[in-house]
Image (tube, rainbow, N blue to C red; front, side, top):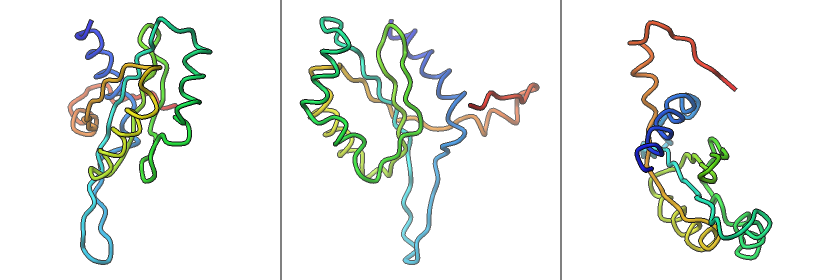
Amino acid sequence: MKNILFVALVMLCISNFTQAQSTVKNDGNKEDTEKMLLTIFLKHDQSMNLSEIEDVRNKQGFYKSFPPEGVSVVNWYVVMGIGQMVVLELPASKLRDVNLAIEKTAWKAFKSEIYPTYDLYPLIEEKLDNKSKVSY
């Protein structure tokens, strides 16, 4: 099951992350802030129906706390049979905040798996014979 999940993750990452490439920004103080991508699987607790899951998220303040300030949502998909897959772009310093938001507001409704990811497509694109890419 984990192998299937991993393959699905890789396929989705490669096809959808070109819009959210890891970037380095310079401010006036020459201090760099490096961004990273984070893929989160929110696996449904199948002992509850969708309404019950939604009630848990609302009671725990999920929609008010997630994503934390300074974190951007790149993609948010339903992965049938698994749950939801959320891709975030964030400074590495915000990783703790994302983890706490998940622990405090998503647990009980979901089991979570979190994977740091990066955009490989720019490196692979030049090697591909067929450079066509789906863009939503």
